[in-house]
Amino acid sequence: MSDNLPEPSVLQAGRGYDGDLYAQAAKNRVGVDCSLYRLRNLVERYFSKLKNARRVAARYDKTTESFLAFIDITLNRLWLRHLST
Image 1 (spheres, helix red, strand yellow):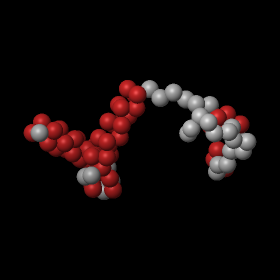
Image 2: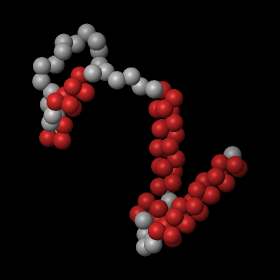
Image 3: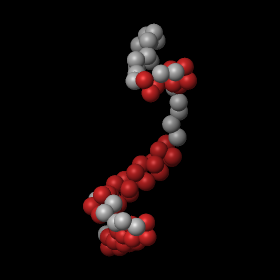
Image 4: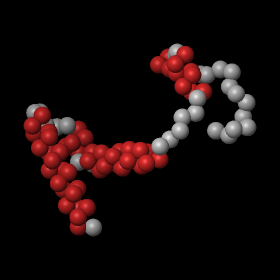
């Protein structure tokens, strides 16, 4: 937001944000660590690529072992695609 705006007198939010802690946090500006944000963005994009495999996103597998095995297969496929480019 622009710095030349007046300080708000009321904070409107859902009930989940009802509390002094959240109101105080909303008024304080928090710095952003750009290197951590880039790393988080990289991880989020990688999970997005992983979820393109419909079987992983919908979790069709009934057992944990088969689900993790398919995640391994999908990750290997993404890694091989990355190597070929």
